[in-house]
Amino acid sequence: MQDATITWRKSSRSGAAGHCVEVANAPAAVLVRDSKDATGPVLSFDTRDWTGFIAGVRAGEFDLPSA
Image (tube, rainbow, N blue to C red; front, side):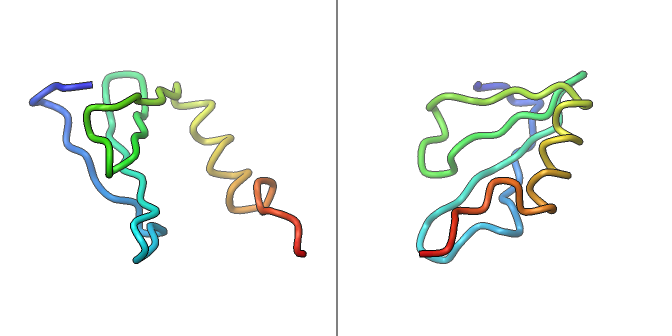
């Protein structure tokens, strides 16, 4: 999504090895993209789904199982 009015910011959880995501607020949505591919695909969450997603991340729902 190329829109001059959208301000992307890098996640504070982005890794030093380049595992980075960026987020941006848009009208009625939160956008997420890979910082290494700024012209690539963008995920769009409505605010309710974004809040649920962040709650799941914080609760460890998406953590990989320990080996």
